Image 1 (cartoon, rainbow, N blue to C red):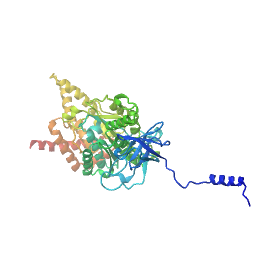
Image 2: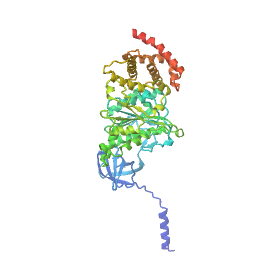
Image 3: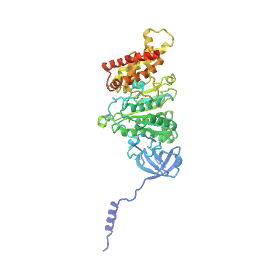
Image 4: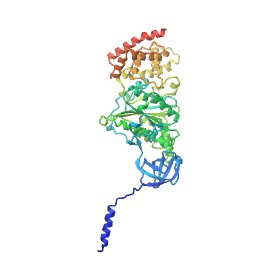
Length: 508
């Protein structure tokens, strides 16, 4: 029996309609040119911005420029391993970062690959490197304090959970030391805050030193170190803060509190400028690209305190910016100041004069932390900022050698002593109840008759005495929401009890 032509046609049509492709067709392209960490790729017409690409040599790349006949791609590894004509495959996914508990205690690069020689990071979960920050409805106001353990910070520029507080100053003024102290303090504070330290463009030896400090102090078990070293490609320096933020957001959405330090965003902006100029994007002010503000705003906006409905987790950001010759009106410093909720300004002259931490009271401010500050701390240190500002004014006036009345002399003496009490050695954060005791002694005149150079010893011995004989009182101060009359009377009794002991020691 002969098969009619129309039957053959219908069979072919049905076969075509029900055809299931057996082979997976990868979208591939080829490298047209490569150099300075940038590859131009032809043929990937459907690639999307931020997508991860696989190069023939095993190097990864990230799509940045989408142009008419090619795409500009930044390489996440050495460009010497990529050559013209190499095949490039799409992965079909935007760049994602490994996240999870397994990262705690590890030192990783921005791709989540280990740098500490402790074997692979055993985690299967990932998060996109770039996400849209939670909206206003998904957040709640900053109202819980995040204690740094530094008297000058917790008293005058307090930080709340979910805040973005900028640490700004010239090189070698103690910016990193403040951030590391804040990380170390989370252990003794015992609130389970997870810390992430992102090192951007630093020497390997500097990062190794920080890791050693954290290890020696027992802080590594709750800390992740993300390191993009000075010798790494600009693409890794660019990715580092976003990668660290993604790791922190994993814990934040689990209802935990996270503290993240970006050290520092000046080098991050420089790396982005390098990438942009090599990608032939038009330069703007100081040769930075036009979207350099967006670079940092989209990162820092991800720090927040989530609403109770979303688990009430928080991500607190401490970005660091390095200034040149104390110039905070430069391009990048002013950008980041306008994005953050306040800044801790470190002054070179104060640092050289022995004031450590070298916080300039006049230029430092916390725009939301005051509402999160413990009431007991606000009670004893409420007027400290104004008192110190008045003291500095009076001090410069007194230099002219004019006769001062008794009240001004008293104000000058008190200011000197309060300034001395704010000094604190590196890597020795203090519990909030101990800070309250020290400020209570200072503001109530218990140190007025003590020589300025004896104050460090007075503070040390007072705290040792209080920890031994009045441990229950310190505990009560830590738990109390505010410093009531009863607690004030007990603190006065403690100081009166200690006074003869210190005087006796002085007479020896």
